[in-house]
Structure formats: C-alpha cells, structure tokens
Image: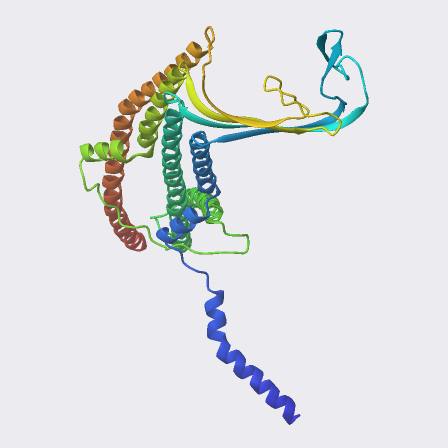
Amino acid sequence: MVLWARIGGVIVGLALLLSPYMAGAAETQVLTFKQLLVMALKYSPEIKATKSEVNLAKEQKNEAHGYRWPQFDTTLTGGLVPNARLPQVRQVGKDKTLYYPDPKDKLHGMNVFGNLTFTLFQPLYTFGKIAYREEAASQNVKVKREAVVLKQGEVMLQVAQAYYGLILANQGKDAVQDARTYLKDTRQRINRLLQAKSTSVTESDQYRLAMYEGGVEKFAAQAEEGSKVAYRALKALVGYGPNQNFRVPADLPSPTAPTQGLDYYIRTALELRPEFGQLKHGLVARQLLVDAAKADRYPSFFFAVMGQFAGAPGRDYNPDPYINDYFNDNGALPVVGAKWHFDFGILKAKIGQARAELEQLKQTERYALMGIPVEVAKDYGKVQENYKGSVGMEKAYVNARRWLVTSFSNFDMGL
C-alpha cells in the first residue's frame, strides 16, 4: 500500500511539473500577416510550378548554346555480304586482261561484315542563326523570372484577402454576440415595462425586436460561414493539414492614407510591375527571332571530319584510291563546306510569322501603357475612399455606442 502511494505521488508530481508545458503545447499559435505571407510564398505549388518554367527556359537556352559546339553522328551496321577476291591480270594471247574471279552479279560464298560510319560537324559561321536564337532564349529566361514575381504577387493578394477577411469575420462574430446581449437586455426591459403596464412600450415593440433578432441571426450565419471559408483558404495557402490549426490577431490594423500622390504610383507601376518586365524582354526576344528567321536565308559554313571503319573476313582489301568499299575499308577525311537551304516561300512565311508575333506583342505593350494608369487611378481612388470611409465609420461607431447607452437610459426612465 505504501509503495502504491509513493508511485501515485510521483505521478501526480510529474503531472504538476509538466502541466505548464502541456498547456503551452495545446495553445493554438497566433500567426501574423507577415508570418503567413512567408509560409505561403514558401509553400505555394503555383510559385514552384512557375519556377519550374524558369528551369525549362534555362535548359532551352542551353540547347540553343549547344549548337555552337561540335556534333558527332555515327551509324553502325552489320549483316551478310558475298565473298570477293581482288581482280587478277591474265595473259590472253598477246594482250593482258583484268579478270574478276568473284564478279558482283554472282555469289561465291557468303560472310559477315561490320561498318561504322561517322561525321564530326563543327559550325564555323552561320550569319547569326545560332547567336540570335540563343539570345532570344536568354530573354525568355528573364520573361519566366518575371512570371515568378507576378505569381508571387497573386499569392500575396490571396493571403491578404483571406487574412483580413478572417479577422473581419471574427470581429463580425464578436459584434453578433454584443448585439445578442443588447437585444436580450432590451427584451427583458420591454417585458418588465409591459408587466408594469408602462405607456412607453407596446406589444408591437416585441415584434419589432424579433425582426431585429432575425437580422442579427442572418448576419451571424454570414459571419460564421465567412470565417470558415477564410480560415480554410489560409490553411490551404500555407499548406496546413486538417489537424494543424492557428489563430490570427483579433484587431485589424489602423487604416492609413496613401503616402504618395497618384502620379508616383502610376510611375512606380510602369517601372516595377512584372507584366512590363515580361513585355520588355518578350519584345527583345521576338525581334531576335525575326533576325534569326532572316539569317536562315544565308548559308552556314562548317568544318567536318567524315570517315568509316568497315571489315568483312570474306572480302579482300582493295587499295585502289578510286574505289571505296562500304564493306571492307577504313579511312577519315577532314573537310570544310557550306550548307545552304533554298525554298520557294517557306522561309519568307516564317519571317512573316515572326514579324506578326512581334507586332502582336507591340500592340499588347501599347494596350498596357493605356490601361495600367487607368487601373492604378481606379485603385488609388478606391483606397482613398475606403480610408475616408473607415475614419468616418470609426466616429460613427463611437457615437452609435453613446447613442445606444443614452437610449437605454431614456428607455429605463420611460422616455
């Protein structure tokens, strides 16, 4: 009995010692907007997918650069081939004739052969075919990087909307509790005055109060559903699982007016928005592709080494320099040359396509230059409107509470 008592005492003591830590672990963590923003930018699958496009563009640039280096082509074949002996010189009368013991139109036994042909090709000068496309691919990498910045901005906006929406919904739920308290108090006052047969209240006041209560319950349902949706959206954005929870601060930050004028924000948008960065690099890339399409009309000069290694046990080696035996011969030869492609409209059409794509991008840039200032002006006006409205709402809130307290006092006094 004494032993069990000691063991129980030890367990109780450990429980008392560990209780503060267990309580701290069970407490839900409060995450600020900046913390959630960092978590969302780190987790976002959309951002990771856009970064993968950057890696793809880099490899495309590496591919374009790879055309500057030598290229090696080889072909290996093998099979059966007729046996063949070298020609022989025979004396026929006073003349000497060349006699072929194994002419190619007859079979004199079969044997195997193996053949390896190769070509080492090194471009020397291509009039910009490679350089233009490589630089265009480099500009495409910059376009994809700007796309990452654009996607990060979209994720930041989603986090901000869900975060402030959640705080606002939670505040709405608190407002519902306050309203329920006031309405409950009002109903008690009405019932008390009705029992006292006061002339300051009537039976219709109860119905009017019920109407207000219905409106409060409707708002309560909206706030509750809005809170759930915003919370789930935030959890999805930061990558939290079903069993991971957090809280957000109870209060919204104090509203502030824009610190700069409209012209400043328009100028900043035109300089820093990633869409304009994409357009700038895209225009350069399209112009380079036009130049590359034009360069395709000119020849490409190259250096090459061509050769073969072939052998067949059933065939004699022929040293004649004018005869190249595909089945039994070895050799390699360095050469320089030019490759020139001609057609009757294909290259011209490709140049036209590149120019059309360039013109399309130029028109997109003009449209953006027209639309962005209007969009910034619209948002700037909305911020000013919301700031002034929030300041006015704060004054209205304070005076509304004063009015409510005064009304209750007058209500109690029968006024």
